[in-house]
Figure 1 (tube, one colour):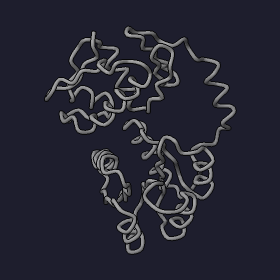
Figure 2 (tube, rainbow, N blue to C red):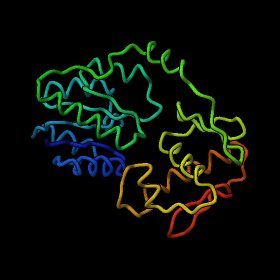
Figure 3 (tube, rainbow, N blue to C red):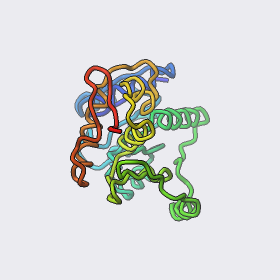
Figure 4 (cartoon, rainbow, N blue to C red):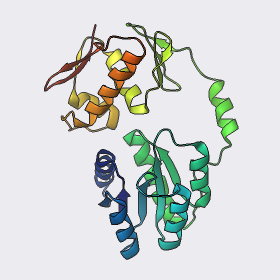
Length: 244
């Protein structure tokens, strides 16, 4: 399957591209609005994965335009603070799926597989058909008590929310996974390779580039919540550790 990945964030573009290549898809990357429009104006793709922030205008308007110009499937990625109405409008406009950033690689790959399989039977239907109210009620009925760890950290494993001394850290999904992994191995030095595997599913990535920004954000959120910022230690050239 030929996939066009269009994202203004180079880290996400490379992450998505690598995930798709590992699943034997051919990938074309577009990092700017001009290069994106140049491709869709000249060529076609079996699947288009486009960031809502790449182009000017609404995401739903972009989806309508793509649906008119391309026969392939459409997945739109949104920043974590995107409104539910914006996502709903994009689905109504013809997007096959909408995914919030940050996302877990396994979830993203599974969604691509579902959309790709749907392309084989020629039907264009939205993935999210269960009413939001129903999903919320079902989840609320089985929420367990938050999990407590040392250092005042508290984790709601169902909702993937982290707290420090009762204050919501408002972590992204990736930040939550990083902090939860560190808390589960408090005092141990966690290598870049181990964290990359836990967070993104990479088994052979020993570089800390993708982690750096998320760890920096976690430190800032911990400081804002009242911690002095030394909870997460950097082991230069190796990885990170949660202070014991």
